[in-house]
Length: 321
Length: 198
Image (cartoon, rainbow over all chains, first blue to last red; front, side):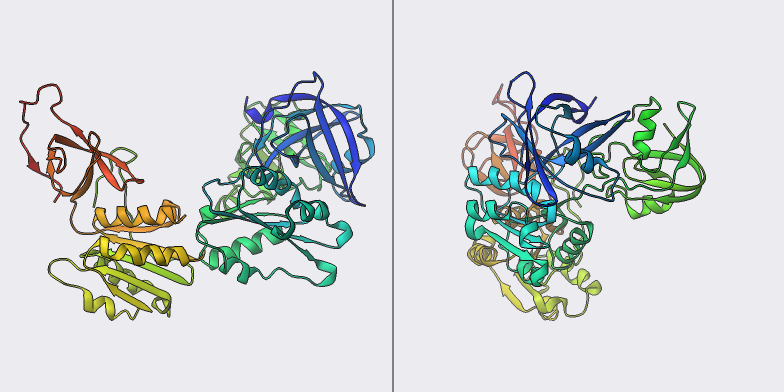
């Protein structure tokens, strides 16, 4: 069993609406002890028991790593998603007992960097809340550029500006404020590391420009949890366990495999970490790959799938599970 | 080409043009050939954003061929020590997007890498190509003295005089291979000295 699947029994200690889309949840251990140490950029997987269905969604820890009395996450309501965020917003109240995973960090700071340049888009701000707290506590050199749709949807923009003043720069889409990316990337001192978290389009844009402007790949860090997308139901045969399962339209392939009593490894459940990578034995149809783990070549080969976020359309799919 | 042994023993690649606007080359002697060969495959205008710092070998070869690449800046240096202030200055003022290319002897690559690491460039982000002599820069683990251009196994420490086994154990921080006393139990035992790092 990997750290990420070790569980913590917690109780919801506070629920705070932040703006019209985002709500913050505070968790404490039920036994009153301190929570495990984590570093900025870590996430936990929250188990949402919603009637007879359980969803497992990853959320970045946004509190200071210097304070482990509680964990905090911020959840943006997604009205067209599979319902995880709606469950959090509607059903999670202070006092509710929940289960979360140990923290896992797939987006950690490289502390050898001379400077940390952070680019956030929308709710992608959450890991930077923890990272900036961590760096500020040790005199680290950072600069945060945060793009949000409007000032009222600039989650924690006020807090960040209050804490870090001119080290935070805001860009509002509705005011047509755009980050001057090429100029920003070209004016950073040697030894700077770049961190980007936000919508997939923003991450791709920043990675492409950084690569073109000569930033070595090992200095560019990014995180984008792909939420599992709903889609048409499909049938899958699990070759190792000899089971045939149906993946519901609101269910992920990984959830369907787990519901059948098969327990594949996982960590992030967002197409990032690679733990649940699964070999395809045979297929007749089309893959809908949504992960950031497999290479384009892997995607084209039809030999591998990340069941946490990817789906399938067609006649038959046989997996090595 | 250096043989692969233990994990700390550096392995070198082949220079290849990287994306970016600024390209800094540091080379000695036959290291020039690595740059000249790479130049056959660079995008147009590549050397317009390049600086080459070159320490010619005793034969003085390759200076004209490097100049013919028309780098934006070209500097000749007599030794690594004499180019060090310029290299440090360039790296201090540099921005992300500067790419570093090191070619030539292990001593040159290692020492230039040491300066670049201090400036914040990750060693995996640098292009390296070994050309020319296999002579080693060695640190005596007993007196900590550095002996340059070690070609024999074992080798005598130029500082404390101990007879040292030159290990493949390499320190990027010191830019040197580690030399460990080969006859600590019985100093009268003198193994034959062979020239193996040519």
